[in-house]
Every structure is written in C-alpha cells, then in structure tokens.
Amino acid sequence: MKIKDIYNLYSKHYLVDTDTRNIRNNTLFFALKGDNFNGNKFAEKAIKLGAIFAIIDEEEYNTHTHTILVDNVLETLQSLAKYHRNTLKTPIIGLTGSNGKTTTKELINAVLSKKYKTTATIGNLNNHIGVPLTLLSMTPKTEIGIVEMGANHKQEIAFLCSLCEPDFGYITNFGKAHLEGFGGIEGVIQGKSELYTFLEKNNKTAFINPNDPIQIDKTERIKTIPFDDSLKFLEVNPFVKLSFNSNDIQSNLIGKYNYTNIAIACTIGSFFDVNDTEIKNAIESYTPDNNRSQIIIKSSNKIILDAYNANPSSMKAALDNFNAIDEKHKTIILGDMFELGETSLEEHQAIVDLVENLEFDNSYFVGENFYQTKTKNNRFKTFEDLLEHIKNNPLKDQSILIKGSRGMRLERLLDVII
Image (cartoon, rainbow, N blue to C red):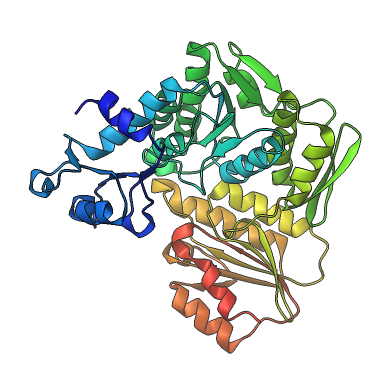
C-alpha cells in the first residue's frame, strides 16, 4: 500500500498510536520494534481495542483483514509524517540545543496557546520516533506547531528537519552534551547547526540569542529575529524575574540560565502578536515538573530537584546558580553525567573541583564516574550506597540541589529525605 493510501486512512481521524496500553478508537496502530519488544505481536490486539488498521512489517502477523504489511514500520511512520507535513498550512517552530529544549518548548507553547490553537511535542518525544508522532498529532485545526528536536550525533537534526520542515528555528545553546556521539564540542556545534543549514537553504527564519556569539556567527546568511529589545533580566533568588515591555514578570523557574528560555518565549509571543498581558500571564502560570528544577518542600528541607538530565554545561550552571541563592545551609547531591566518551573522567573531575571551590555544607557524589574522581567530599559508587548513607545520616534544615543524568534516577532520594 502506498503512503498516499495510508494517509487517506489516517486523515479520516488524524490519530496514530504505537502502544496498545494507550490505544484510541479509530487510530492507526504502528507496530514499532525495539531491542526488547516487537509491536507486530500486538497488531491484532490493537485492532480489537479500537484501531482501524495496524501497520506491520512481518508476514507472519498479517492475519487480519485490517493489517497492512509494509517493508518497514518505522520508515512508513516517518514517511507518513512527512507527507502530512506537506499537506499542512501550519507554520512550525523547530527547537533544538544542548540544554533547556523542553522547558523552552513548554514556555513557547504556554505563550502562543493564549492566542492560537497550538500543537507541541509532548514531554521530550524529540527523536526519530517522537518527531513523526508530534507531526501526526497536528490536524488542519492546528494554527502553530512547536517541534522539539533532540540529537546525540551528527546528521540527526538534518534528518528531523527534513521531516518537520520548520518555518522558524531556535537553538537554545551549544553545550557539552552527548560529547561521545558528536565527537566533542565542535561536533555539537556542527550537529545542532544543521537546523541553521536547513533554514538557510529554504529561506526560513531563525530566532537568536544576540548575546551568544556562536548563534551570531552561524546565522550570518539567515534572516534572524533577536530577543526583543525591551527584555531585561532583573534578579534570581531563587526564581527568575525579568522585565518585558516595562512589565515585571515573576516566573516559577529557578536559575539565571532560565532567563534566556523565558526571553525567547516572550520574543516569539510578541512576534506572533500575543499581547503583553497574556505573555506575562503565561510565563507566571508556568510551573516546571517532571524532575526539571522542581522545588519540593519537605518538613525540614527544601529540595531543588533537577534530576531529569545533566551534562557538564548544565551541571556548572546549576551549581553556580545554587551557590548564588541566599540560603544559610546548602547541600548538593550530584549523580553521574552520561555519554561523555573519552572526556568523562576529565569532565567529572572538573565538576568536583568546582564544588570544592564553592564549599557547600555537604557534598555528595554518586555513580561509577564520580567515584573515580579525587575529592575530599563524600562519594558513592552506587545509588544504594548513597541511599543507605542518607538514611543513617539524615539531612536537616538544608537547601538541597539534586542533579544527575536521567539514568541515575536521583528522584528516588525523595523517599528518604525528610
């Protein structure tokens, strides 16, 4: 069956699902495969649960009148998303960067949804599967699309751009993330800048941070829109406060590093004619969740939980911000940073050295990488070792920063910190 024919089925309801645990009536089920699962096995179940057709790529499961056999389910999903994108009149904003992508996307969506019917990436579904699913969640009623694009190697952003064909693009920053896949910081810059390459080739527009020299350099030949001139950073203690068109905005985001994320949301909102009051309301109403700079109050401790992700750039920014916060007693708990390749020990040691210069009340490092560093502070090879230590030596009356890569799952500490 050709993509056009599958599209005719899809466009009757604009629904696509890949998980039978969340199947919807009248959806198209795509039987994706992974290292530990084979969606083909669930094709008949998906149909019984309400899918109108199941797209499969293994002949032995082609046992139902509503299964459609293709050469490759993933490639068919991607092709369908690209076909759909070409039918939409919707302007799309593409986002990438080393840090802050998801928060920035959420802020932009909060602002634009005050005036428009928006469709944005859910959570951080920003890869070769997530981007097609985001595109296919858009309907002809979508007025603006916001697509987050993640990458851990070169040519990935280029491929995702070929699917979503953004009309506007924004790169949050270029940091030390996924160094192993990109081959170093220069590789990160090249990989993320593939968004700029697409915008230039297709005569599209880049939003830029005018204080980032890399963004200025890489967009010399592109139409650009810098941060709004009226934006002004005011303070952070611990939440970012700024001024926009003479209106003070008090956010619920900690860390000066979040100022640029708010600034681009204000800039894009203004560009799309969202009024200042609505922009202010959107920013002030946004509260981070999902382990991203959440503030959690316990009976005796205040926790900044930033355990969704970590790399050397975001770790340093978080530590500098935490150091600047006006609190009497401070404790840090840092978990390993992943995908750093040959520079892993060097980068972990640099974070340890930074911490020792800042002299917090208590400092704990956990993970096999941090365990190899030289430090006078507490270090633990496993999470279980750290957990046992905190159980036996409870923290009290502390402001606590918890930060580490997603794989460390440091949010589990919330059960033992009182």
